[in-house]
Image (cartoon, rainbow, N blue to C red; front, side):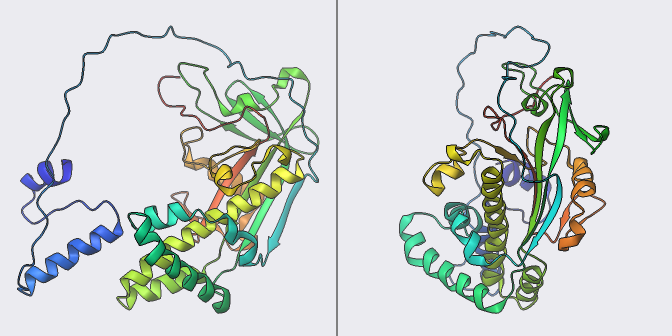
Length: 334
């Protein structure tokens, strides 16, 4: 309604809102039909604002708390298989395709609605694309990952060097209320005298897939472009999930993993993976620190001045082994 009422009133031309790329295509088809005077061609009616009546709320405020959260400090610290970084290239598609979140692909990326369209249209298209990717060598899956000693101090996570000195430092936001969680709480505090361990990873499916999607776009093959682009993004995420599972296994905490992939997507495991830009670690500039630790140029990944990873189909993350580590929103006052 903000777009189709507020902006529509002040913009001299036509302005419409599309929930996803496929709805955008339908809008463009309707516009072209109107331009070509196709009988019956018309834009859908403008969305109307619906503001439901909201009951009055009591102003019950939780008392402000200060200090660290109540996260446990006595969990075992696992022994990593190595300290430092390693590069793995040429990961076959079959190794990580099973980690593909099909619901996110079909509904989020491809805009399919309902089980019938997913079964009749989505799955056959997915099988065709996976077969094409398998035979065309468009994917160049690679990972650079590593384990580093670390401690925490307040809201800071301090990555240590081989001699125990500070190598780099991340400062994370803390919840203003509730448990007052902060990512640093999942790491042994400096004053404990113990050293913890943290994992970092950057994964990519390479640049060739981006070149192919650009070619499809230039050829006006918009449906193929959107399907392949959406699939490549989800395959990068599948590769990240696959490698995350390997990290949990290397740290000896995979015993808590669920039996199904759906359970994995619901994070029913120990050892949470946090990607920069999300509520618990929103500072994208911290990507420069991860890049300094992992040197992702060794797998063809580079960081732009805007702290975006290139190729686009790449993701970075840090992995916390603490059993209480979970996703949370650190918004609000600190």
